[in-house]
Length: 191
Image 1 (cartoon, rainbow, N blue to C red):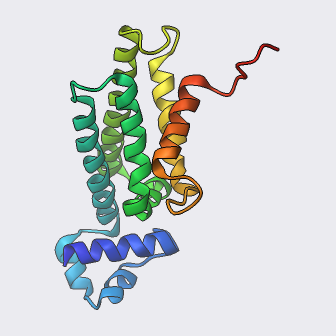
Image 2: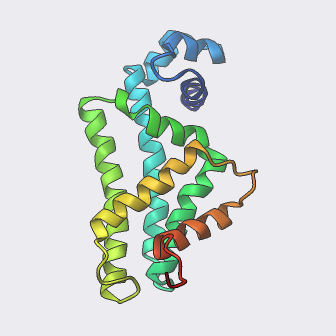
């Protein structure tokens, strides 16, 4: 029942927003009672925190597996992390939109918990870039901290516009992003 409540909330939060969705909306959509809701959650905000936490912990686990693969270069690992984020749009696009759009409704301990996990994900990307710089896979003049923020900001915003069934495949978009990150938009032709 908890999973049904969460999925109903994800659908409604995506459609109506966190503030526009009541607990009654969630329970009514699956034929449950408010008592059922309160059996699993203290509040709508706690539910939102659980949605966030489930999503980010899954990403962190997959990111860890990518980073710890000894058979891949940092270049390939960066591609795999970008692809991981993009490929989640097909299966978890609503979750992703909620995570970025509705985070502002989290407060106190809930907000700090989610911020901490998001920071962990970013710092893992930063460490990957630092390792790539140290191994001369990436430019020595790159600031890993700023680059990690920039890469994740660009890729995470893909949830707002990317259609997995559209013009570009997930692989093509990941390739494009990685090429853009590594080469920028400067012409290779002399001016």
